[in-house]
Length: 64
Image (cartoon, rainbow, N blue to C red; front, side, top):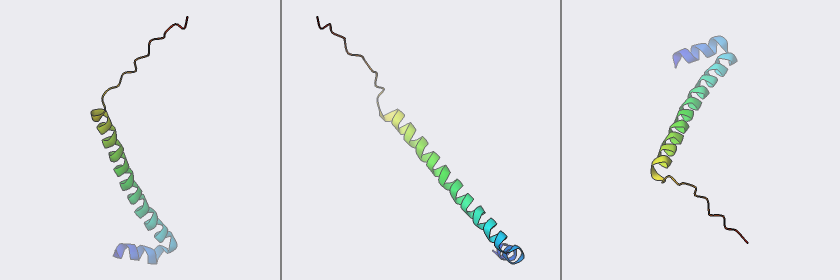
């Protein structure tokens, strides 16, 4: 925390912006990883819980 305060004193608004961007980037990366894990889990769950459904065409009857 002291390093952050020293950076802010030395570089002012630029340091605040850099620290804010770094913090936001870390949060977004963490959230992105959670979303990928959730989607992967959902995909695997769908593969193993739903039966493989084959599409069987209906017999075409002549209308003659």
